[in-house]
Length: 286
Image 1 (tube, rainbow, N blue to C red):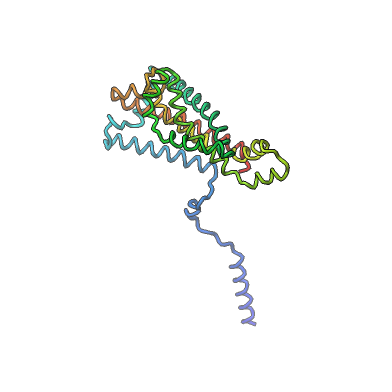
Image 2: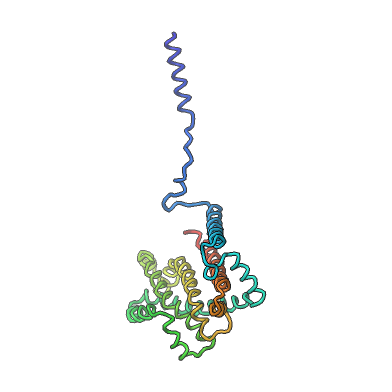
């Protein structure tokens, strides 16, 4: 009886051990899963934390004398300079002028590049003669074309728009053609089997399939358009952020130069986040 009781007692202990849930030890490896996902709040917190940490490091380096303030001023100095420029130099007005120029040039480039890129990829009789020309021009450095731009268009507003368009169109048209080329051939074959005509396949099947990638490429090339702003606004300009930065550079006003650069970065960041939100809302099925 004693042995039987011990055996039953032992079985009960075994059952208790097996029924007790095993708690996994917390590990940082769960945050480093390849192509893993994070909660939206965690992404925002990490983004803000990384930016604040970088600013604090920059401020500490400047205050400890690790950098020369003439060439690399502290963030607090740059922010103070930005405040003075908003009040005394109409910085926000200059930012509005630059934003208008960028969007005008970008919309013109997009209105031209989207149909041309789609036709280049859809019909080889169009793509074959255009691709070598576009590939040649897109490798030309935009600054080298500034003298020709002045000869062709003078020093007015059209030259600035042209230079911004030049830095955007030839890149975007090839991206659009690649988006159309990535549409699976099965979509076209199924639509043809169902009796769709070529223009219906292009408009209702291929274009809708390429649309998510197209929006992403528009967002990327809009950023490229901003990178040519300084080049466009040093051509006999009297307004715009590029003009403000170039004027401050002449007098070694590094805080003012960096303040102008920061304004461009803020405008670009806000615009990019808005376009990202539109993409997520429009293409929730992805």
